Image 1 (cartoon, helix red, strand yellow):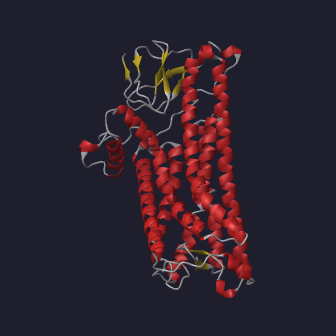
Image 2 (cartoon, rainbow, N blue to C red):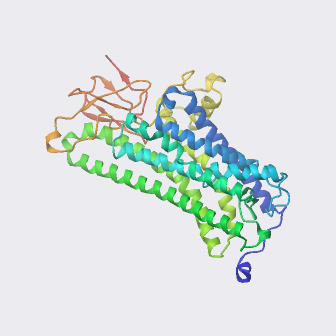
Length: 432
Protein backbone atom coordinates (compact mmCIF):
# COMPACT_ATOMS: atom_id res chain seq x y z
CA UNK A 1 0.00 0.00 0.00
CA UNK A 2 2.84 2.37 0.84
CA UNK A 3 4.44 1.83 -2.55
CA UNK A 4 1.14 2.55 -4.27
CA UNK A 5 0.70 5.78 -2.34
CA UNK A 6 4.16 6.95 -3.43
CA UNK A 7 3.20 6.47 -7.06
CA UNK A 8 0.28 8.86 -6.75
CA UNK A 9 0.91 12.54 -7.41
CA UNK A 10 0.26 14.93 -4.52
CA UNK A 11 -3.42 15.88 -4.32
CA UNK A 12 -4.44 19.24 -5.65
CA UNK A 13 -5.89 21.59 -3.08
CA UNK A 14 -9.37 23.05 -3.23
CA UNK A 15 -9.65 26.57 -4.54
CA UNK A 16 -6.78 26.26 -7.01
CA UNK A 17 -7.21 27.61 -10.57
CA UNK A 18 -7.29 24.04 -11.86
CA UNK A 19 -10.27 23.21 -9.65
CA UNK A 20 -12.05 26.35 -10.86
CA UNK A 21 -11.32 25.31 -14.46
CA UNK A 22 -12.68 21.85 -13.70
CA UNK A 23 -15.93 23.25 -12.31
CA UNK A 24 -16.37 25.59 -15.30
CA UNK A 25 -15.65 22.94 -17.94
CA UNK A 26 -17.81 20.33 -16.26
CA UNK A 27 -20.72 22.76 -15.94
CA UNK A 28 -20.46 23.88 -19.58
CA UNK A 29 -20.30 20.30 -20.87
CA UNK A 30 -23.26 19.25 -18.70
CA UNK A 31 -25.33 22.24 -19.85
CA UNK A 32 -24.64 21.49 -23.52
CA UNK A 33 -25.50 17.85 -22.90
CA UNK A 34 -28.82 18.82 -21.30
CA UNK A 35 -29.55 21.04 -24.31
CA UNK A 36 -28.76 18.26 -26.80
CA UNK A 37 -30.80 15.62 -24.95
CA UNK A 38 -33.74 18.00 -24.54
CA UNK A 39 -33.78 18.84 -28.25
CA UNK A 40 -33.76 15.16 -29.17
CA UNK A 41 -36.65 14.39 -26.82
CA UNK A 42 -38.69 17.33 -28.11
CA UNK A 43 -38.09 16.28 -31.71
CA UNK A 44 -39.08 12.67 -30.99
CA UNK A 45 -42.17 13.45 -28.91
CA UNK A 46 -43.53 16.33 -31.01
CA UNK A 47 -43.48 14.53 -34.35
CA UNK A 48 -45.91 11.70 -35.04
CA UNK A 49 -43.57 10.32 -37.69
CA UNK A 50 -40.74 10.21 -35.18
CA UNK A 51 -42.88 8.65 -32.45
CA UNK A 52 -43.93 5.89 -34.84
CA UNK A 53 -40.31 5.08 -35.72
CA UNK A 54 -38.52 2.50 -33.55
CA UNK A 55 -35.07 3.99 -34.03
CA UNK A 56 -36.37 7.35 -32.85
CA UNK A 57 -37.91 5.79 -29.73
CA UNK A 58 -34.64 4.06 -28.82
CA UNK A 59 -32.73 7.32 -29.21
CA UNK A 60 -35.41 9.00 -27.08
CA UNK A 61 -34.85 6.48 -24.28
CA UNK A 62 -31.10 6.97 -24.52
CA UNK A 63 -31.60 10.73 -24.32
CA UNK A 64 -33.63 10.37 -21.13
CA UNK A 65 -30.65 8.62 -19.53
CA UNK A 66 -28.26 11.30 -20.78
CA UNK A 67 -30.56 14.05 -19.53
CA UNK A 68 -30.82 12.61 -16.00
CA UNK A 69 -27.08 12.02 -15.81
CA UNK A 70 -26.22 15.51 -17.07
CA UNK A 71 -28.63 17.02 -14.54
CA UNK A 72 -26.86 15.25 -11.68
CA UNK A 73 -23.49 16.35 -13.05
CA UNK A 74 -24.57 19.98 -13.28
CA UNK A 75 -26.06 19.94 -9.76
CA UNK A 76 -23.51 17.55 -8.25
CA UNK A 77 -22.53 19.94 -5.46
CA UNK A 78 -26.12 20.05 -4.19
CA UNK A 79 -26.13 16.31 -3.47
CA UNK A 80 -22.73 15.50 -1.97
CA UNK A 81 -22.10 16.27 1.72
CA UNK A 82 -19.49 18.86 2.81
CA UNK A 83 -17.33 16.22 4.51
CA UNK A 84 -16.63 14.40 1.23
CA UNK A 85 -13.02 13.92 0.14
CA UNK A 86 -13.69 15.40 -3.27
CA UNK A 87 -11.65 18.39 -4.38
CA UNK A 88 -14.93 20.32 -4.67
CA UNK A 89 -17.04 20.39 -1.47
CA UNK A 90 -20.78 19.85 -1.64
CA UNK A 91 -23.63 21.36 0.34
CA UNK A 92 -25.87 18.29 0.56
CA UNK A 93 -26.51 15.83 3.36
CA UNK A 94 -26.81 12.09 3.88
CA UNK A 95 -30.34 11.96 2.43
CA UNK A 96 -29.44 13.76 -0.79
CA UNK A 97 -26.33 11.58 -1.09
CA UNK A 98 -28.49 8.43 -0.83
CA UNK A 99 -30.93 9.73 -3.46
CA UNK A 100 -28.15 10.48 -5.91
CA UNK A 101 -26.39 7.22 -5.05
CA UNK A 102 -29.48 5.21 -6.00
CA UNK A 103 -30.53 7.07 -9.18
CA UNK A 104 -27.15 7.98 -10.70
CA UNK A 105 -25.85 4.40 -11.22
CA UNK A 106 -29.04 3.56 -13.13
CA UNK A 107 -29.10 6.51 -15.53
CA UNK A 108 -25.55 7.75 -15.22
CA UNK A 109 -22.22 6.96 -16.81
CA UNK A 110 -21.87 3.24 -17.21
CA UNK A 111 -25.60 2.81 -16.66
CA UNK A 112 -28.58 2.19 -18.91
CA UNK A 113 -27.23 4.62 -21.52
CA UNK A 114 -24.50 2.16 -22.51
CA UNK A 115 -27.01 -0.65 -23.04
CA UNK A 116 -29.33 1.71 -24.91
CA UNK A 117 -26.47 2.30 -27.32
CA UNK A 118 -26.15 -1.48 -27.64
CA UNK A 119 -29.90 -1.67 -28.35
CA UNK A 120 -29.48 0.95 -31.06
CA UNK A 121 -26.55 -0.96 -32.58
CA UNK A 122 -28.64 -4.15 -32.59
CA UNK A 123 -31.45 -2.27 -34.34
CA UNK A 124 -29.06 -1.14 -37.09
CA UNK A 125 -27.74 -4.68 -37.47
CA UNK A 126 -31.22 -6.16 -37.86
CA UNK A 127 -32.26 -3.49 -40.37
CA UNK A 128 -29.13 -3.29 -42.52
CA UNK A 129 -27.86 -6.86 -42.51
CA UNK A 130 -30.95 -8.96 -41.84
CA UNK A 131 -33.56 -6.66 -43.47
CA UNK A 132 -36.05 -6.80 -40.61
CA UNK A 133 -39.28 -4.89 -41.18
CA UNK A 134 -40.99 -2.70 -38.60
CA UNK A 135 -43.56 -5.35 -37.73
CA UNK A 136 -40.73 -7.77 -36.89
CA UNK A 137 -38.80 -5.19 -34.90
CA UNK A 138 -41.80 -4.33 -32.76
CA UNK A 139 -41.82 -7.87 -31.38
CA UNK A 140 -38.50 -7.30 -29.62
CA UNK A 141 -38.69 -3.56 -28.99
CA UNK A 142 -39.87 -3.82 -25.39
CA UNK A 143 -36.77 -5.84 -24.49
CA UNK A 144 -34.54 -3.19 -26.01
CA UNK A 145 -36.02 -0.77 -23.45
CA UNK A 146 -36.23 -3.14 -20.46
CA UNK A 147 -32.82 -4.81 -20.59
CA UNK A 148 -30.80 -1.56 -20.22
CA UNK A 149 -32.37 -0.83 -16.83
CA UNK A 150 -32.52 -4.29 -15.23
CA UNK A 151 -28.87 -4.93 -14.21
CA UNK A 152 -28.16 -1.39 -13.02
CA UNK A 153 -31.38 -1.20 -11.01
CA UNK A 154 -30.31 -4.42 -9.27
CA UNK A 155 -26.91 -2.87 -8.52
CA UNK A 156 -28.58 0.18 -6.96
CA UNK A 157 -30.87 -2.00 -4.84
CA UNK A 158 -27.88 -3.98 -3.58
CA UNK A 159 -26.05 -0.74 -2.82
CA UNK A 160 -29.04 0.53 -0.83
CA UNK A 161 -29.30 -2.76 1.08
CA UNK A 162 -25.61 -2.54 2.02
CA UNK A 163 -25.95 1.15 2.95
CA UNK A 164 -22.95 1.87 0.76
CA UNK A 165 -23.80 5.17 -0.91
CA UNK A 166 -20.72 7.29 -0.27
CA UNK A 167 -19.18 10.32 -2.01
CA UNK A 168 -16.31 9.58 -4.36
CA UNK A 169 -12.88 11.06 -3.64
CA UNK A 170 -10.69 13.18 -5.88
CA UNK A 171 -12.26 14.79 -8.96
CA UNK A 172 -15.54 12.93 -9.31
CA UNK A 173 -18.26 14.84 -7.43
CA UNK A 174 -20.95 12.20 -6.91
CA UNK A 175 -22.41 9.73 -4.44
CA UNK A 176 -22.45 6.13 -5.66
CA UNK A 177 -22.07 2.64 -4.17
CA UNK A 178 -18.50 3.00 -2.94
CA UNK A 179 -16.48 1.37 -0.13
CA UNK A 180 -16.44 3.21 3.17
CA UNK A 181 -12.77 4.10 3.57
CA UNK A 182 -13.13 4.33 7.36
CA UNK A 183 -13.98 0.62 7.65
CA UNK A 184 -10.82 -0.60 5.95
CA UNK A 185 -10.29 -2.74 2.83
CA UNK A 186 -11.01 -6.06 4.57
CA UNK A 187 -14.49 -5.11 5.76
CA UNK A 188 -17.10 -7.59 4.36
CA UNK A 189 -19.33 -4.77 3.12
CA UNK A 190 -16.45 -3.10 1.32
CA UNK A 191 -15.45 -6.41 -0.26
CA UNK A 192 -19.04 -6.92 -1.48
CA UNK A 193 -19.09 -3.42 -2.96
CA UNK A 194 -15.80 -4.03 -4.77
CA UNK A 195 -17.12 -7.28 -6.24
CA UNK A 196 -20.27 -5.49 -7.38
CA UNK A 197 -18.12 -2.79 -8.99
CA UNK A 198 -16.20 -5.45 -10.91
CA UNK A 199 -19.47 -7.01 -12.07
CA UNK A 200 -20.74 -3.62 -13.16
CA UNK A 201 -17.52 -3.02 -15.09
CA UNK A 202 -17.98 -6.37 -16.84
CA UNK A 203 -21.50 -5.33 -17.91
CA UNK A 204 -20.16 -2.02 -19.23
CA UNK A 205 -17.42 -3.71 -21.22
CA UNK A 206 -19.93 -6.21 -22.60
CA UNK A 207 -22.26 -3.39 -23.74
CA UNK A 208 -19.46 -1.56 -25.56
CA UNK A 209 -18.07 -4.78 -27.08
CA UNK A 210 -21.56 -5.81 -28.23
CA UNK A 211 -22.08 -2.43 -29.88
CA UNK A 212 -18.72 -2.74 -31.62
CA UNK A 213 -19.52 -6.23 -32.92
CA UNK A 214 -22.85 -5.02 -34.30
CA UNK A 215 -21.11 -2.06 -35.95
CA UNK A 216 -18.51 -4.37 -37.49
CA UNK A 217 -21.19 -6.68 -38.89
CA UNK A 218 -23.08 -3.70 -40.33
CA UNK A 219 -19.89 -2.46 -42.00
CA UNK A 220 -19.10 -5.87 -43.47
CA UNK A 221 -22.67 -6.21 -44.72
CA UNK A 222 -22.62 -2.83 -46.49
CA UNK A 223 -19.20 -3.57 -47.94
CA UNK A 224 -20.45 -6.92 -49.26
CA UNK A 225 -23.43 -5.22 -50.88
CA UNK A 226 -21.12 -2.67 -52.49
CA UNK A 227 -18.96 -5.38 -54.04
CA UNK A 228 -21.99 -7.24 -55.37
CA UNK A 229 -23.43 -4.04 -56.77
CA UNK A 230 -20.19 -3.25 -58.58
CA UNK A 231 -20.13 -6.76 -60.03
CA UNK A 232 -23.44 -6.21 -61.82
CA UNK A 233 -22.55 -2.86 -63.32
CA UNK A 234 -25.25 -3.14 -66.00
CA UNK A 235 -27.85 -2.84 -63.27
CA UNK A 236 -25.84 -0.45 -61.17
CA UNK A 237 -28.25 2.48 -61.31
CA UNK A 238 -31.16 0.91 -59.46
CA UNK A 239 -28.98 -1.04 -57.06
CA UNK A 240 -27.11 2.09 -56.00
CA UNK A 241 -30.28 3.65 -54.62
CA UNK A 242 -30.48 1.10 -51.83
CA UNK A 243 -26.73 0.73 -51.40
CA UNK A 244 -26.30 4.44 -50.82
CA UNK A 245 -29.07 4.49 -48.25
CA UNK A 246 -27.43 1.55 -46.48
CA UNK A 247 -24.25 3.60 -46.24
CA UNK A 248 -26.15 6.49 -44.68
CA UNK A 249 -27.65 4.26 -41.99
CA UNK A 250 -24.31 2.53 -41.39
CA UNK A 251 -22.61 5.90 -40.95
CA UNK A 252 -25.19 6.94 -38.36
CA UNK A 253 -24.53 3.66 -36.55
CA UNK A 254 -20.80 4.42 -36.51
CA UNK A 255 -21.28 7.96 -35.23
CA UNK A 256 -23.60 6.91 -32.40
CA UNK A 257 -21.04 4.28 -31.39
CA UNK A 258 -18.22 6.84 -31.38
CA UNK A 259 -20.28 9.01 -29.02
CA UNK A 260 -19.92 6.20 -26.48
CA UNK A 261 -16.48 4.88 -27.40
CA UNK A 262 -14.50 8.14 -27.36
CA UNK A 263 -15.51 9.46 -23.89
CA UNK A 264 -15.44 6.01 -22.35
CA UNK A 265 -11.88 5.42 -23.51
CA UNK A 266 -10.71 7.66 -20.65
CA UNK A 267 -12.93 5.83 -18.15
CA UNK A 268 -11.70 2.36 -19.08
CA UNK A 269 -8.05 3.46 -19.04
CA UNK A 270 -8.55 5.00 -15.60
CA UNK A 271 -10.19 1.85 -14.24
CA UNK A 272 -7.40 -0.43 -15.41
CA UNK A 273 -4.76 1.97 -14.07
CA UNK A 274 -6.46 1.97 -10.67
CA UNK A 275 -6.58 -1.82 -10.65
CA UNK A 276 -2.80 -1.86 -11.03
CA UNK A 277 -2.26 0.86 -8.44
CA UNK A 278 -1.21 3.47 -11.01
CA UNK A 279 -3.70 6.27 -10.37
CA UNK A 280 -3.33 9.14 -12.82
CA UNK A 281 -4.97 12.37 -11.74
CA UNK A 282 -4.95 13.91 -15.21
CA UNK A 283 -6.82 10.88 -16.57
CA UNK A 284 -9.39 11.23 -13.79
CA UNK A 285 -9.76 14.89 -14.75
CA UNK A 286 -10.35 14.10 -18.45
CA UNK A 287 -12.73 11.27 -17.57
CA UNK A 288 -14.99 13.58 -15.57
CA UNK A 289 -14.95 16.22 -18.31
CA UNK A 290 -15.72 13.99 -21.31
CA UNK A 291 -18.16 11.42 -19.86
CA UNK A 292 -21.03 13.95 -19.45
CA UNK A 293 -20.71 15.04 -23.10
CA UNK A 294 -22.75 12.15 -24.55
CA UNK A 295 -26.03 14.07 -24.68
CA UNK A 296 -24.47 16.92 -26.64
CA UNK A 297 -22.64 14.59 -29.03
CA UNK A 298 -25.77 12.50 -29.59
CA UNK A 299 -27.60 15.71 -30.46
CA UNK A 300 -25.01 16.54 -33.13
CA UNK A 301 -25.32 13.08 -34.68
CA UNK A 302 -29.13 13.07 -34.43
CA UNK A 303 -29.66 16.45 -36.12
CA UNK A 304 -26.96 15.80 -38.70
CA UNK A 305 -29.47 14.48 -41.25
CA UNK A 306 -31.77 17.47 -40.75
CA UNK A 307 -28.83 19.83 -41.18
CA UNK A 308 -27.79 18.17 -44.46
CA UNK A 309 -31.34 18.22 -45.80
CA UNK A 310 -31.79 21.89 -44.91
CA UNK A 311 -28.48 22.68 -46.58
CA UNK A 312 -29.90 21.24 -49.79
CA UNK A 313 -33.24 22.99 -49.39
CA UNK A 314 -31.50 26.31 -48.73
CA UNK A 315 -28.09 26.16 -50.46
CA UNK A 316 -27.50 29.90 -50.14
CA UNK A 317 -28.27 30.10 -46.41
CA UNK A 318 -25.25 30.50 -44.08
CA UNK A 319 -24.44 27.42 -42.06
CA UNK A 320 -24.75 29.25 -38.75
CA UNK A 321 -28.28 30.33 -39.71
CA UNK A 322 -29.25 26.73 -40.42
CA UNK A 323 -27.85 25.60 -37.07
CA UNK A 324 -29.63 28.47 -35.34
CA UNK A 325 -32.81 27.61 -37.23
CA UNK A 326 -32.69 23.97 -36.10
CA UNK A 327 -32.32 25.06 -32.48
CA UNK A 328 -35.17 27.57 -32.72
CA UNK A 329 -37.45 25.22 -34.65
CA UNK A 330 -36.93 22.58 -31.98
CA UNK A 331 -37.01 24.61 -28.77
CA UNK A 332 -39.17 27.59 -29.80
CA UNK A 333 -41.29 26.54 -32.80
CA UNK A 334 -43.84 29.33 -32.29
CA UNK A 335 -41.34 32.18 -32.02
CA UNK A 336 -39.56 34.15 -34.73
CA UNK A 337 -41.11 32.46 -37.74
CA UNK A 338 -38.71 34.34 -40.01
CA UNK A 339 -35.87 32.22 -38.67
CA UNK A 340 -37.57 28.87 -39.14
CA UNK A 341 -37.19 26.58 -42.13
CA UNK A 342 -40.28 24.39 -41.96
CA UNK A 343 -42.89 26.73 -40.52
CA UNK A 344 -45.54 25.10 -38.38
CA UNK A 345 -44.93 21.62 -39.73
CA UNK A 346 -44.10 19.15 -36.96
CA UNK A 347 -43.97 16.07 -39.17
CA UNK A 348 -41.55 17.00 -41.92
CA UNK A 349 -39.62 13.73 -41.50
CA UNK A 350 -36.22 15.42 -41.77
CA UNK A 351 -34.91 13.59 -38.68
CA UNK A 352 -35.74 10.13 -40.03
CA UNK A 353 -33.09 7.90 -41.52
CA UNK A 354 -33.60 6.36 -44.97
CA UNK A 355 -35.81 3.28 -45.02
CA UNK A 356 -33.92 0.52 -46.76
CA UNK A 357 -34.87 -2.81 -48.27
CA UNK A 358 -38.58 -2.62 -47.54
CA UNK A 359 -39.12 -4.78 -50.60
CA UNK A 360 -36.76 -7.46 -49.34
CA UNK A 361 -33.11 -8.32 -49.72
CA UNK A 362 -31.44 -7.26 -52.94
CA UNK A 363 -30.82 -10.25 -55.18
CA UNK A 364 -27.64 -10.02 -57.25
CA UNK A 365 -27.85 -13.43 -58.87
CA UNK A 366 -27.78 -13.98 -62.65
CA UNK A 367 -31.50 -14.69 -62.70
CA UNK A 368 -32.30 -11.40 -61.03
CA UNK A 369 -30.60 -9.16 -63.58
CA UNK A 370 -33.32 -7.40 -65.53
CA UNK A 371 -36.04 -8.76 -63.19
CA UNK A 372 -35.67 -6.48 -60.21
CA UNK A 373 -38.44 -5.84 -57.71
CA UNK A 374 -37.19 -2.34 -57.11
CA UNK A 375 -40.13 -0.05 -57.49
CA UNK A 376 -40.69 3.61 -57.80
CA UNK A 377 -39.16 5.93 -55.23
CA UNK A 378 -41.40 8.00 -53.02
CA UNK A 379 -40.37 11.53 -53.96
CA UNK A 380 -41.93 14.62 -52.44
CA UNK A 381 -41.58 17.38 -49.90
CA UNK A 382 -41.82 14.98 -46.98
CA UNK A 383 -39.42 12.52 -48.56
CA UNK A 384 -38.73 9.48 -46.37
CA UNK A 385 -36.53 7.61 -48.84
CA UNK A 386 -38.34 4.29 -48.96
CA UNK A 387 -38.46 1.87 -51.88
CA UNK A 388 -42.01 0.63 -52.27
CA UNK A 389 -42.95 -2.92 -53.14
CA UNK A 390 -44.11 -3.22 -56.71
CA UNK A 391 -43.73 -5.61 -59.60
CA UNK A 392 -41.78 -4.39 -62.63
CA UNK A 393 -42.79 -0.75 -62.05
CA UNK A 394 -40.41 1.96 -63.12
CA UNK A 395 -39.56 5.29 -61.60
CA UNK A 396 -42.00 8.03 -62.51
CA UNK A 397 -40.92 10.03 -65.58
CA UNK A 398 -39.85 13.65 -65.51
CA UNK A 399 -38.22 13.38 -62.12
CA UNK A 400 -35.72 16.19 -61.58
CA UNK A 401 -33.32 16.02 -58.67
CA UNK A 402 -31.16 18.68 -57.10
CA UNK A 403 -27.50 18.47 -57.99
CA UNK A 404 -26.34 20.04 -54.70
CA UNK A 405 -23.36 18.08 -53.40
CA UNK A 406 -23.77 16.65 -49.88
CA UNK A 407 -22.78 13.53 -48.02
CA UNK A 408 -26.13 11.75 -48.05
CA UNK A 409 -27.38 9.64 -50.94
CA UNK A 410 -27.99 9.37 -54.65
CA UNK A 411 -31.17 9.32 -56.65
CA UNK A 412 -31.64 7.66 -59.99
CA UNK A 413 -32.95 9.81 -62.80
CA UNK A 414 -34.57 7.16 -64.98
CA UNK A 415 -35.46 9.61 -67.71
CA UNK A 416 -31.85 10.57 -68.48
CA UNK A 417 -30.24 7.37 -67.20
CA UNK A 418 -27.96 9.41 -64.94
CA UNK A 419 -27.18 9.46 -61.25
CA UNK A 420 -28.54 12.58 -59.63
CA UNK A 421 -26.94 13.50 -56.35
CA UNK A 422 -28.54 13.33 -52.92
CA UNK A 423 -31.95 11.70 -52.63
CA UNK A 424 -32.27 13.42 -49.28
CA UNK A 425 -32.90 16.68 -51.09
CA UNK A 426 -36.51 17.62 -50.50
CA UNK A 427 -36.48 20.09 -53.35
CA UNK A 428 -37.10 17.30 -55.85
CA UNK A 429 -40.14 18.07 -57.96
CA UNK A 430 -42.47 15.58 -59.59
CA UNK A 431 -44.43 16.37 -62.70
CA UNK A 432 -47.46 14.23 -63.25
